[in-house]
Amino acid sequence: MRLGILTGGGDAPGLNAVIRAVVRAAMRTYGWPAVLGIPEGFKGLVERIDPIELTPYTTRGLINEGGTILHTTNRANPFQYPVGDDQYADCSDTAVARIAELGIDALVVLGGDGSLSIAHRLAEKGVTVIGTPKTIDNDIPGTELCFGHMTAVSTATDALDRLHTTAESHHRIMVVELMGRYAGWITLRAGIAGAADAILIPELPFDADSLCEQVKERAREGATFSIIAVAEGAKPKGGDVSVLQEGSGVYQPQLGGIGTQVAEKLRGVTRLETRVTVLGHVQRGGSPVAQDRLLATQYGVSAVDALARGEHSCMVAYNRERIGTVPLEQVAGGFRPVPLDHPLLEAARQVGTLMAE
Image (cartoon, rainbow, N blue to C red; front, side, top):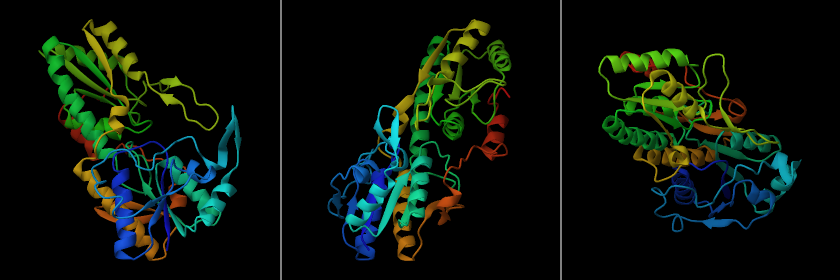
């Protein structure tokens, strides 16, 4: 069996580790030929970019490298492919024909919700495909953990640790806006690990007035500073998410600005010096932490094992410390928010974290 592999959507730590694992499992365990790496995601299929031959030798040392050696783009949906200013065309037949032309028997797609939805539609057109869940947001249904997420949590936690010292030195309120789109996984986990005094996530719309009063009460009780961790998709009760740039065509809106809104409200009500830090794409970069390296390796090997068993049109998934598969049709177009009964929420409340519910 000849495999093709591509990385679609935004980058995340662990992509290279999955590529390495797929290549090694395919060639060393099953004796399959070299894996073909498709450059720049689905764009590489539509625009017939020359593939890269991947072997255990050419992928050595990748387990600790961030980014993706295959490069990626989130603007190359073959079913709505950009062909001009605000013009799109269905180029999926071109992609399917290119897969056949390259002699690819099965395509391994490393991606988030968008890329896996595309993978599902390609499977409906007859392509043998299997997906691996990649996103720092950790919002893909069917799996408890996506690779890249824990590295983003670690990066955000480190930032919160560092902001504690400057906040304490200057007696300031520090508002930290974190990524995650419409899911609060990064902010919840990093907020707890980084001892944030308040955590605001999309799943729990917050009461801005209550937040201000709670921060003022902290000050009255002797707290000389406060750290507020806010997810980019968080919103006040009765309000909407903050958008920096509206979506256009097939592109999603760019979230952001809620950190500034929260800081302005706190500054106006509490009269305390307040600063904002938007951590941004730092959370998506750098070397994967050990947990992501392990998960990525398991995902890569499990994807090859599943194909060897004859499984396809599915995604490898981590649930209850086991790797299995779930049908792509259960993943495509889905979303996994933080459940309101998640034990981390209760843990945050019990250690005194303000949720401003």
